[in-house]
Length: 429
Ligand code: TYD
Ligand code: MG
Image 1 (tube, rainbow, N blue to C red):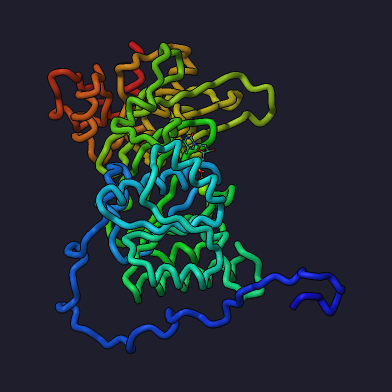
Image 2 (cartoon, protein in one colour):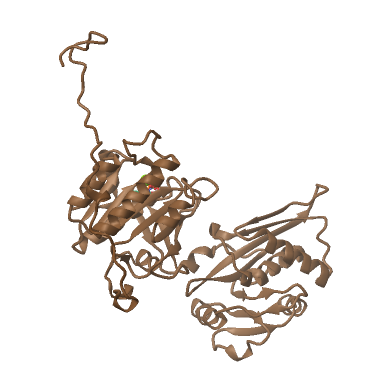
């Protein structure tokens, strides 16, 4: 139409393609029939997509399981798009074909990032954000991996809701999953998480996918941890550690070296260990106790469960007669790591003791054990493995739960202790 009958303006009409006719995803093949369990194809036999990024491949359980749908979530600016582009590049170098939908950023921004990462060709990129068009392309293109960056920007024109709302996300996830299943596509969906750590567009997203990967870390720290929160095809125990560099994310092969600060050890600092999957990681725990000026002393724990801290403080108070009632206590894990297992308890107790007594410990001393309520030091899982690794990393002494005498190593002196009382005596002679 040349002239608008409404306002009288010339040439003001623009063509808009309506996406009312849904592509064939909805119809799909014939109804499913029931099959005997024995006739089903085993998962281990189905192939996986290796990306060549070792840390990522390990966290996914040996590569991306084909014909599955994955969710990669993390806070804004954490490096989801960067990691994803590197994954795409790895796949593509191994002969895979990748289709990358990025409604989040313009083609120029994507190109800039790719240039920074030294990735120049091969990956198919589209800025499409309408679901129907995306699905049509997914079905018609021959691809090994499809990326949706991010689910919050995709929308169905048939729905009234704006992009990013629960109904849009739920609908988009549902139809993407359907496409993955019916057409044998492998889809990686990127989703933002809110400040509280939940994937924006609540839990249902996690139920709808096969694998949920979280990329964590914070802007102040340049390392990033990738973990599987859910994995239908592998363990959720593994983590991948990266640093964010100028050239993108770089794998950290020996994370322990990373959480140990090289500055001199002052009072309040102690080395402890946690298991991440089958890998022991050694980290530095710092405690600071100081006379409180408040009626209610402060208790602040970074990276350690506050309840664990409170239990340990109570044990120290009751069993070792330390009066902590008027002391502020601050705890921190160097590097911003989170240690969620009880085996860190002994190190926490020693850090607090060291700060209270204002006596420094040696950086090459390692404290591993769970602290029981009566002050006993309890055994922890994978002690042997931790000791083995500690010996390799050059620790001098390891303070461990009582019954571990047999684990002695040439390079590493093992000091078994049964109670926190005994330990305090041995560590501070
Ligand atoms: P980005 O992958 O865009 O984060 P997300 O998709 O999770 O929002 O990257 C976030 C930050 O990473 C960005 O602010 C800049 C930084 N960065 C680097 O430090 N080095 C790099 O090579 C790239 C590509 C990004
Ligand atoms: Mg992004």
